[in-house]
Length: 115
Image (cartoon, rainbow, N blue to C red; front, side, top):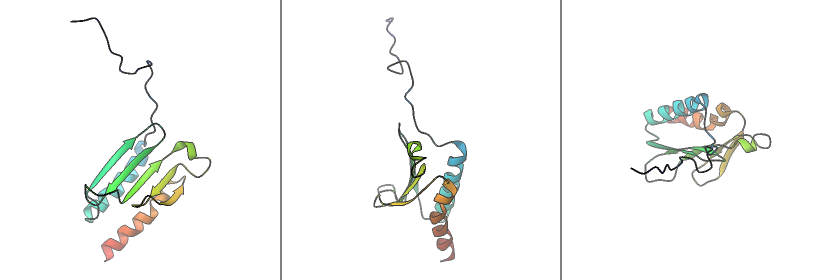
């Protein structure tokens, strides 16, 4: 056994990451669960990077994400910390209120149930 220890973090400091907090994840996963129950979404991905956190929802696993919910704290004072991104990469909505940002997706869920 050697005496060499490889540090977990290169500079001794953990890399900073942007994360969704518990309340944000609760809102997102609540919507995701209802969309799965309606048969519209089947998979999701969470990406936590230095500058942004991203939740992507998929109709099928191999597809591009139907929507992505992005949190970029650096934009909070300019355009809002949250961005709703469509399937083709277009920005559907921006804002500081996550619940209001999810409203277009919520309306689509109501239409799916009524149809």
